[in-house]
Image 1: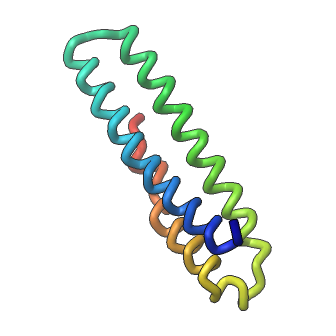
Image 2: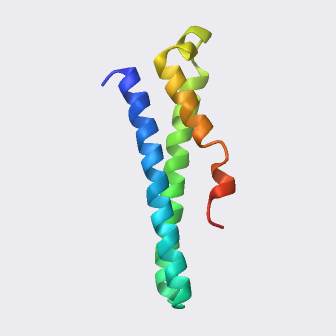
Length: 97
């Protein structure tokens, strides 16, 4: 897999993670409605693990992006990674408390 394919794959994985996070949030809210505290704790643990993995992925690519020179940042890989960072700029504000 070349660098551009890896950048596109990272972007795709990160966006897919958002749908998984939303699904977990919906499960947690449904469990809250039924007062299933054991289920809430289990789902919240999975939610937190997903968030940590997503942040780890973003940090890995952020570190990689910061090593690029201006020419590399203007190429497709740099543009894709920049788009990824823009999509997740406010991630912490949108996460479930």
